[in-house]
Image (cartoon, rainbow, N blue to C red; front, side, top):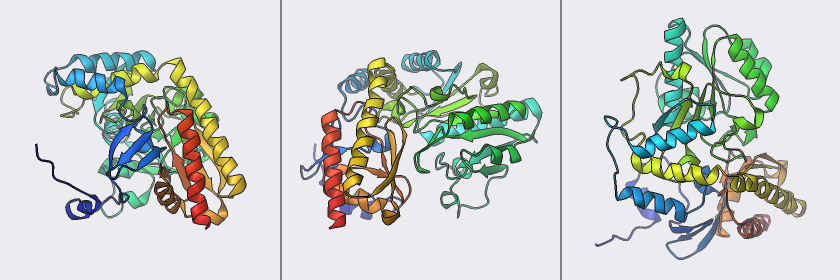
Length: 403
C-alpha cells in the first residue's frame, strides 16, 4: 500500500487553523516515551492532556482492541452489545451510579449531563426550573451548550446569542454560590479539580457545602470529572476524596486510555427522565471503545495502580521544587495525584507556552493550564526513571530560557 509522506507544513495547508501544533509529528509511542518522524525521543509528561492513562501502546489495551476488532466494530443503538454492558456494570459497581450513558468525548458527556439536568427539572418542577450555575474559569467542552456553561468567555464569544439561564460564580467560594442559587436552579456544575482553569482542587469543605445547598434548593449536583476521573487523582474518581456524592458525573479522557469514549453516570431517580428517544449518540457505546475502556478500568481500579499515583505525585512535586530552588521559576505546585499544576513565579508569569516549547526542544512534552501554569498529566504508571529523566530535561529547558 502506498503511503504519502506528510510533514508538519501539511497541517497549515490542509487543516482548519483552530490548532497550533508543535513543529514535529510523533509517529510511535511506548510507555511514557514518544518518537517523531526523525527518530527523536521524547519523555511524555503531557499524557495527551490527561488521556493516556496507561501510556502509549499498552499491551493490555492493544489486546483488548484487536480482540474486539475481529468481532464487532459498530452496531448502532438499535442493538446493544456485550462490551457496553460489561463496562457499564463495572462503572456502576465502582461508583455511586445506577445507570450509564455512553458517548465519545467529554463535551458530549457534559452535553448529556446538562440536558438531563434540565429535563429532570422540567419534568419534576416545571420549565421555570432550568437555571444552571457553574464556576468562573471552568471548562466543560466545546459544543455551544458546554462553552456556555464553561466559565471562560473567550471560548463562547463570537458564536451568536448566548444560551440563557446560565450563571457563573467564583470557584471554591461557597458564599458566592449561596447568593445566586434558588428554586429556579436545576443544577450546579463543578470540576472537583479545575483542569484548564489552572489545576486547582476544590476543598472538601466547599464540595460538602455545595452538596448541602443543592439539596436545600432541590438542584442536582453535577461533577465534571472528564479530566480528574479514572484514577487521575489517586482515587478512581476525585469525588471519592471528599465523600461528596454527585447526582450526575461525567468521565472521558482517561476512560479509554486514548480511545475516544465518554460516559455520563447518574442515579435511577434521574436517569428515568431520559426516556426512549430523548437523547442519543450514533457512536456512543460502540463495542471497540467499550472493550478498551473496560480493560482500562480493570487495570486502573486496582490497589497497586491507585496507590502508586500519590508516590509519583510526590516525586514530581519534589523534583519541580528542587529545580525551582536553583532556577526560581515555580511559586508553588498544586493539584492532586497525577494532575499537577506548577504555578509560575512572578518573574515568569505569562511564559508557560515558552516553557512548553523549550521543553519540547529538550525532548520533553508538558502542558500549560493558562499562561501562568505548567501542567503535567502523565501516565498513571509512568516509570520512576522516566520521571527522573523528564525532570532533568525540564531543568535543561529552563536553563536554556535563562540563558
